[in-house]
Length: 105
Image (cartoon, rainbow, N blue to C red; front, side):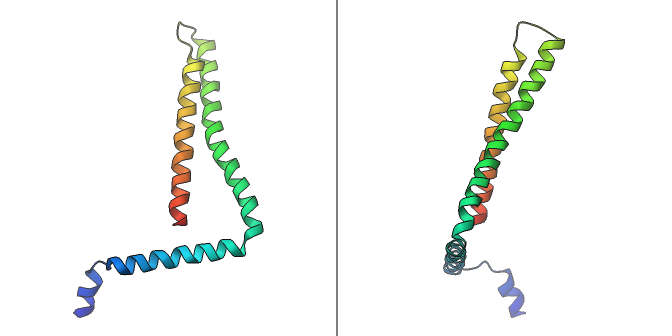
């Protein structure tokens, strides 16, 4: 009975803090061991973030050109979808980077 009661209790703030410090120390030690890997890893992350912005932007431009070609009008769909694709790509990159940084904590 006592184990069930203890299992339902939330961890104490001090225990949470200790686990967080241990996790960060492990990450720091792993990063120190993999110094050569970190440069290439960083460049790879740079590339992934770039592609996360470029792909939606190019899709928006291609779709806008297609719409403008088939249904010309007073509104430039190419320009509007370029801006929408760029915004979507930036949000996509921001969410991805935030998720990756949360995994490092």
